[in-house]
Every structure is written in structure tokens, then in C-alpha cells.
Image (cartoon, rainbow, N blue to C red; front, side, top):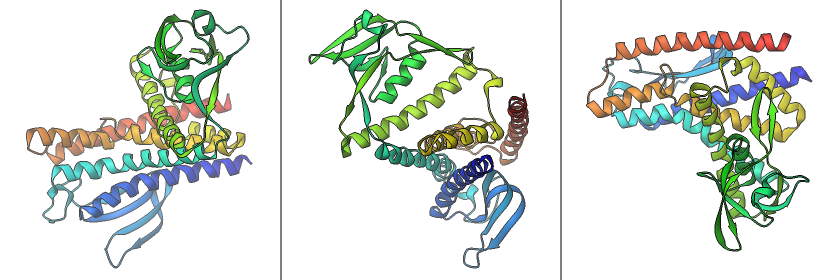
Length: 344
């Protein structure tokens, strides 16, 4: 079964890469950019075919760790009227962002399928408290509808659980709707738990389910997708600016494959939720303004839009090359960490 789970993980990576690159490819074709090659994977070619109609090479390569759409005029000046460098900057920005956008859309669609297939949809109205609940002694009551924790609005049970876990380690102000009126409860304390050396807030009450209709399915799908984005963003912020996470907490392809295998072994729902998380993560990470990422290219395009003059393609190419080297170095480090964790 372990081999099957690893195969599932590889197929997941391949599909996510395909969707990402297909976004770039589709946008490039819409704006009539000359495309040289559409490749899934990196390294030696396993399969390659040139379309007689479009003269585009379609390739499947050996290493499922990336992919690319090679466009004329991408990293060099070209006289081809359909070269990327000859297109208006707003069109190039759309082409650059299209890959990440497709990953985010895919995450939302799979999340919608998960919500539709779920047995019940959780709301934010308190149905009952756990035995010995802490928060009830700070003013929370049954039938309270929690709408905000500190300044963060909550819309679903998933929002609520995550916000308590991430933001309610210290006392927080909780805004509720009680008997039709808005009530703010100051300095509410929730219980805590510790996992892997990190302290988290813990929900100590049950919530009512909400009716499973078209409106609530759409609402839950949207806000659970937004909450996934927030989880990833919070993790990035904590990694860069906080003291809770370090580079040692990062995982590369080996660690992610292990996580996917573990999720698949638990059940189909967990596997597809991991699918959502990785797809959204891929979309957000690629939009970060770092060299070699789509966000790095967008950064240069925004500068061009402001100054109304393109950055030297040679200089931008050097910046992205350095970025690729640094990303590869980081990949080696986290992969070594993943292997060390597995064998230890």
C-alpha cells in the first residue's frame, strides 16, 4: 500500500503542475504569444511531440518536480511580433499570474466537492459545552452565534476552530449575536494544548450544524477556501517574522509525499483535503515576490508598469537565475531534513 500512496502523491504533483502550466499556456494562447514548448516535469524527455498545426512541442519529462511553458521573448528580446516581450505589460501580467490562479481555482473546486460530499455543515452557533469548559466561565453561552474573535470574522465551524487554535492562545475578545443583539465579551480564555512543541488554543464547545442547501454549500466552500489561504499565509508570516517556526519545520517533496501518503491512508476525504491545501499552497507560494517565481516576474512587471519602461531582460534573467540557485539550495536542505526525519 505504501507504494500505491507514493504513486498517488506523484500523480497529485503531476496534475497540480499540469494545471499550473496549463494556466500559463492558455493565457499565452489567448493573447497569441508564440509558444515553443509546453513541458510537464523537468530533466530528460520521456515523451515529446511537435504539433503540425501550431509548431508547439509538447513534452513529458522524467522528474515530476516542475514544468514550464517556453515562450518566445520570455527572457530575451525578440523581433517576433507575437513574442512575449512585444505584448503589453498588462497581458504579460495576466499570463504570469494565470498559473497560480488556476491552482487557486482548482483548490476551490475540490473544496466545493468536499463540502457537497460531507455529512453535515458546521455553523458558529454554540450548541453545548464540553465538560469542564473554560470559555463558558468567561461569558460564552449556549445559542451564542460567534461572529468575531478579536478583529477576525468567522463564518463557518472551520473558520472558528482555526481562529481559536491560531489566535486564542491568549485571552481574546469574542463578539457574539445573543438574542438578536451584538455582545462583545472581553478577555475570553480558551483551553490550550501542545503539539510538536507548539501551543495552540482549543475549542471547548459543540456547534449546531446548518442546513445543507445551495446557499450554505456555496458559503461553506468559499469561506473554507479562504480559510485555507489564511492558514498558509499565517504559516508564512510565522515562519518569516515569528519565533514559532523555523526552516527545520519546512518540508520538501519527500516530506510532502509522506504527508500525502499518511492522509490517503486515513481516508479519501483527508487525501482530497490535502490536495486542496497543496494546490492553494502552490498558488500562493508562486505569487510571492521572489526571484524565479511567478511573483518575482510580476514584481518586475509592476515596476515596468510604474516606470513605463521595461527592466533589462538580461538583468532580470540574472536575478531569476540566482533565485533558482537559492531555491534549489533550499530544496536540497529541506529534502535532507525530510530524509533525516524519516530514517530517525
